[in-house]
Length: 100
Image (cartoon, rainbow, N blue to C red; front, side, top):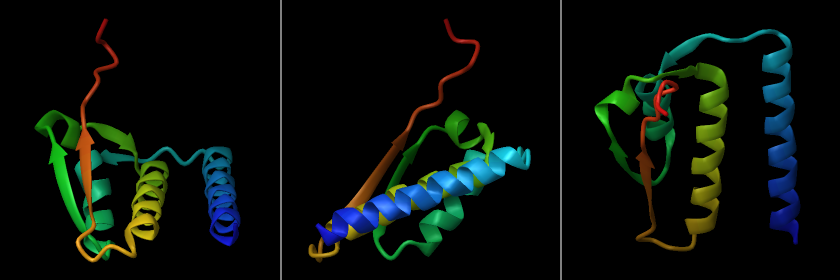
């Protein structure tokens, strides 16, 4: 129960930060790989990244995407902390806005 409560508090914190970024008009974009790379380096777990070149180059809202990626990785780390051989596999596919 305590872990669930902590997860809810973390998600509320992220939601609040995302709302603040939106309110202040934070729209700086960066390549997805440039946003993902520091998240990988700061992770305490083995991360397997399967990303297509066009997805790595896709422009994304940098701060918002980093917050989301960090939360996903943090949640996975918490879920796997009891497993010494645990790891995270990340797969990203690029969807063009112009696709039908």
